[in-house]
Length: 331
Ligand code: UT7
Image (cartoon, rainbow, N blue to C red; front, side, top):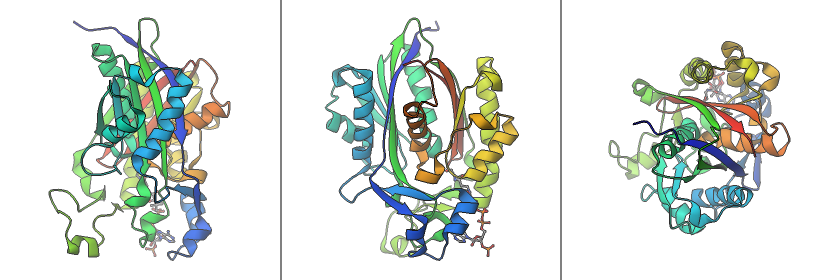
């Protein structure tokens, strides 16, 4: 029998490291220019985690803000989901490190790997777990320390990424339905266009893999660009269709912040009101699983989102994975 438990969104929180790496700094590291990076991507600067900070530290800082805002006790959290592709270690999950740092010992904790779509996959899990009645207070974190898995000698990728974390807290509700709809997609036939070739069971880390720099992110940018635009436009429309809504019902779009040209192309293809699209890619670059939730938290703090607004998050990433969700922000 279907359980109809709804979800209330209690809060958001985000954290970005203090260190800023500008396009001009990158000019000194690889053969690139502020002009190329700005015109091809819209990125001006990005944040880089301090050597002493790890992924779970970034997650902890974002989660703590969300927990304080939600005015809940960490003891009440019964599920922690961390979306990341740059974990503290291959094993155990970053969610376990986060649980320890938060002292949220009543929570079950695990990671999900859906790359840049990870936060939207996490929101979908929160909805499903709460609807099933299994968990009642869920913390979902999108977090990346991409600087640790970036090849700083490869100008094709190193200018794109940044570090950061965002968190959202959900609770079971008999009256609210703040996760209005979610839509996910996956296509495993393109695993090779965006990946980290070595360090797994296919190609375990050896001296050779390290020398060949195969333990870093590789991307065929042009191929990824094309699929990103078509799948994100599709996801925007699908999530609206599932909710019985249209563009005029959406107060703010929060697209994955990988490239300003992708954001503009998605808006055009999906037929969304351009003025309603939130952009912060110039400040942070692509923070993978952290981008949409950091942007949403920032938009709320800036007053771009008002109580009762509907926001639509949409993302695309390695896998390939994509997804969109429509959230009611009512706190
Ligand atoms: O997070 C989810 C997944 N990621 C994305 O969504 C990213 C998707 N892809 C992109 O955003 C874009 O494809 C890039 C920004 C990565 C690249 O832009 P592009 O317009 O597709 O450029 P390109 O790869 O076709 O490269 C054009 C030229 C090449 O030179 P040649 O072969 O034409 O002589 C590159 O070698 O630009 C060169 N280039 C650079 N030049 C200066 C590539 N990177 C750089 C650089 N600085 N950093």
